[in-house]
Length: 444
Image (cartoon, rainbow, N blue to C red; front, side, top):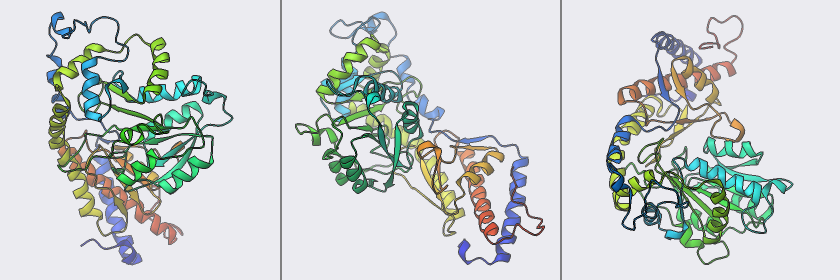
């Protein structure tokens, strides 16, 4: 049975630490090369979509029933069949769907850039002309969201992420009091990295926000809307249905993509918003590009046929991903359960496991893992400016490695957590002073 670290004597700590240190040196000598740093689909997942490569074989296949040739210019807003597919999947109107290239991150960046240059609506001041622009950032959160804000010099305000979504008391208070707050980042289902699913109450409170800034927008990054690992996972409420016909009808920018549905580097991205927002955006998108890759949009529509086709496809992804998540979580339970060293999420979907360390040691664990041949997302990445105030959170991505690699990586991770925790505890006891033979500088 794992003994809680708080119940261990100094002698027990020193003995276990010495044993772990010896094992760690052996691991380092093996020259491992493991990677749990990014949420990349594995080869088996990519293979599920190889039918996309053959659905269009001749020029005749590239025209739809209305004679529109997907190889030619036009259809800036996207191929109708693919827009219809995502309107059905997302529960929105066809006219509110825009299709882009392979990355929803690009659409998010462009939405911020348009707001900076032209404002979010006719007559609205561009954000770049405002004295200050701020965004609320639920944390732990997605590092690439934060990078967009940093790129534009937008001040980021951390908000606590809870099991059912952001701390809405704080969100409502800050948004209603500060006109400089122009947006908030949200990953409403299987939030990155915690796996949280926004509760009905949280979604309703978002839909009913009363921001002081009339140009405030919710950036609703629904990247994992169909990425369930298990059957019976609840869907989140449709925020567009809640805001339709209200004063908040223009409040939401929703984004999603097929990056982790079909091909990560060759999928299609989706921007969904109100009629007024879409009209305003298209004025500038139409000056920016004639059209995205319509052949790719069209072949996705043919490949899936309808929203149910996407849901069936995602069950195949779940069969591949579920054992990977369970392998990592099982190792954490076995090696660290009851030891008071860490806590970890057990998500029902998405792409990440969120790991919170008890001893303010995330950076140290990251360093130890890296020196042992295993790459993690850098400590601090899940907070604005890369600064985790507690130095506690690490994001674990189980999707890309093989099961064999994951078993090995999980053991290395647990070993490094134990080492870092005991280093911290023994250091606080003054153990690493007065010429001790055990050094704090292992792995450096």
